[in-house]
Image (tube, rainbow over all chains, first blue to last red):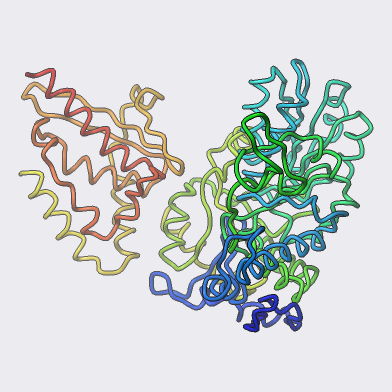
Length: 421
Length: 141
């Protein structure tokens, strides 16, 4: 599965094409029963399952290649460094970044956003500066900005949304002014599935002299990402939502911005030389990668990218859209069910409430029937305050899900509702 | 009836329902029947906020020095489970509650609802009951 044992580079880049119809066969975890029923995993927006190739790559690393990366003179250190840096190149190509040093490895999206808030934010935000954040953001793209805004005396302006879950673009134009320094927004809403017009907002923000950080956690596995075409200044995502392991992620930043930013954490790896008279820092990307990184996580992410490329992100996207359309159609026929997030452009996420039924009860009864969905506020409390509800039940799809699973889910949902009403 | 006897009684009741579906139907019925908390206590002061569902719980001590509880939840399964907790602990002395070993939820196979992340508020409700018992017991002595 894309792994060679010859010790040269460790990973075979010539992974053969995987047909979308065979996608499911690559995920061992799906072939199990939960509460006596075949597992139906509809919690993909929280984390995706891992293909055999990724699991094998991580195992291979520990069986054959484990050594600390960079500056080692021995063969294993050379091998693990090559594989780690190959993952960086894979990420660069995958998101179409101009330069490989624009790819900073982090522990995930949250870590990447905190990095930018702590370094760019601390250096550039002044008292009275403004940050625009949509009301539909994940907490991890709100709280780091609240923390740095409080420290620097900056002000957060909340971008409202329309009834269908799309951004209120008229309000955006009104919020944008010469004090706006940053727009922090997601590409796809984790709670609503809305695919947001980031390129449009980025263009307007740049005209006003502001930069834009895009949280790509929900888009990187579902859309073809081209950061140069999008023209975002920062783009953040996590490996575990794109078939890779937890604890690894990426901060992409435009080189000029990254070079201007002070380091994030101090330690080994991020320095050029250290003395008690003064320390100089390493070049990009190492300036932001203090300490021994999550080596096997990054290597696993590289393998996840190769896996997705061998399937084709476009094929995966089409499969997900079929599931979304089929499920949306079926759910609309359930009495008292309301879908939140009804934009024309949606990712494979369906958030809904059922009149007179609590989401915790639904989630519990669905779990008893082998179906994994997410219930609650999905780390977007301001969004649900806007809609004046406590939370939703959320089903989110990956290409290993099937139309038959959607039918079973809808049937189980109807059964649960009947029990609860 | 002691706390332990009431727990045994519930465990026996659930043994009549081997299927998960029947068990949950029973809990849902309990949730529907559970006397709702007095509206004056369904306020933020008595709210135990969970990530998933919310629980309201009121505790008082009656003339005989026994603790009396009423509870409510916005989720019906949580409410049914809260009703079971109330049934086991209601009319006990603070000392009995402090020394109680609550094992029936585990024994009837519903331990998942006592997640330590306080996701549904039930674990926090039990913790709150113990704290109330401690407070009443301290006031008494």
